[in-house]
Image (cartoon, rainbow, N blue to C red; front, side, top):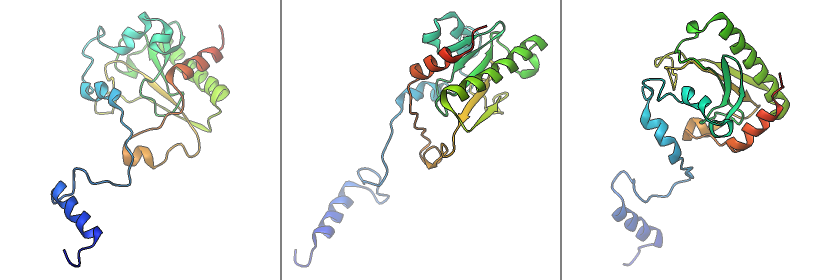
Length: 193
């Protein structure tokens, strides 16, 4: 093949291996972080927990703390690590009762819910030194609640620079500690009553 360069020949080989959209087999500059463990959550969707027998927030307190990732148990609510954390130390404050809405909890539950949230922030400041926090409750499926049937509040520690392009572009979050390590740190630092 007179006048054919190596690059042109490779291009021809690539053309044979791919379609006109250059989909399969075309290398790019991106690396892949495979997270197949999240598929159970993704496939289940927001309506995955129909009753309290299936609800992870109702089932968790019946198991050992280490197994359920519980860091503290109160009288009417408890604190647990988020199984799919935004950042290390991402905690959830949950009432024991299976109720979907913030307006469903009693004044006593509301007081403990708030107290546990404040304590969670203090403990996370002690063990992880975050620069700030995101606190929030996603109410109902339309509000973005992953488990809409059981009220829970997110306590997410934040650091300068923790929100980079990775979650936005790749829909992936790099977490620097295992859930077991974080649970032990937070549980050990939780003040005794």
